[in-house]
Image (cartoon, rainbow, N blue to C red):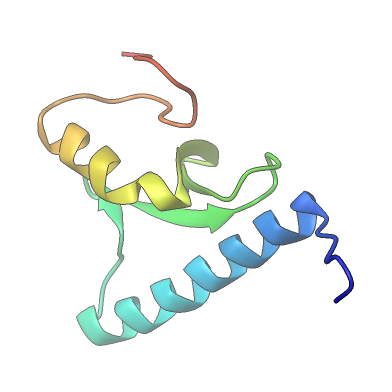
Length: 88
């Protein structure tokens, strides 16, 4: 079996693309923005090099951390959740 080589940039792009596709389906079902924070929509992007949900055009949290980040936002925490540690 040959080893598989992955270019991380392409993996992150693929994750953002899949998140966007799932988001489109959810938006169609809800007839409104999803996910959102404080009434502001989040959009998937890998422009930062990591597949992130972006808020107001800036990375807000990694795609895989959405549930925890939304929970923190509901508790009143805000800020960039793409790094380790608090940015609030």
